[in-house]
Image (cartoon, rainbow, N blue to C red; front, side, top):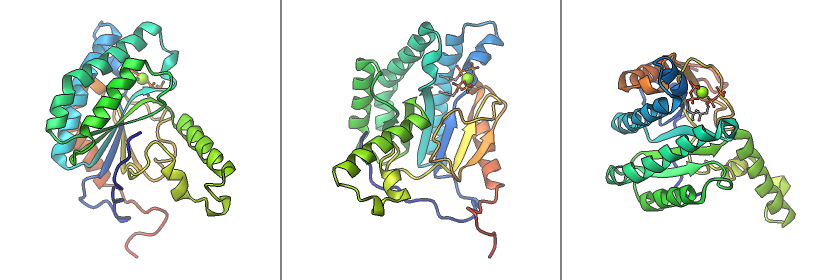
Length: 251
Ligand code: IPE
Ligand code: IPE
Ligand code: MG
């Protein structure tokens, strides 16, 4: 995982008219979008890549600082091999095809998830995308690939346990901050807004630690139909929320 300069946390106050600094998206419904049209599922995934492009552009235009996209979960390995291959091929295509433009637009790419088990050429492409965009100062595009929240927590705990055994971390000094520094998302503020498309209202093992105080917006639209208007509607919904973080409003 690449290291990043600390991103300032959003002020712990009402969301007001502020653009959410970190938006995370569970891009769901590609298969159903295709089935509803009598098309193979891969067609939905292909159209989903176009939604990714639109969304990255729009997030940047709106002033979002971090956009996290769930592209492949640790549970998605249970899908048919042919669909997994299609999804991997689309990721290869996306990095090869879009990296130059992302670079030009100042996007910094960072990938979270388990690196083991990922095809070698994809791991190399991911590495290249991270390295070549490391110096960029625009939108941080955090790609969750081969990612599972529980897997991330267990990997973090294992690293912490090893450090405790070596005497590098004193259990007495262990804290939420130290824990967060061992997650894949180290140095990135928690999401302010989580959007899930396709009408499902669950988080499917995404960012379990980081979503503690995130506002959730579930949209009925399938991912290939997610566009700028849908994004703006989710932000408007976010603005209507009163974020209290356990405190009281207006005190
Ligand atoms: C989201 O669409 C993409 C991935 C999970 C990779 P789905 O493939 O889950 O589409 P549905 O939910 O079956 O419609
Ligand atoms: C979550 O969607 C994973 C991604 C969007 C990559 P799924 O389609 O895999 O989730 P479930 O199976 O509906 O919970
Ligand atoms: Mg799905």
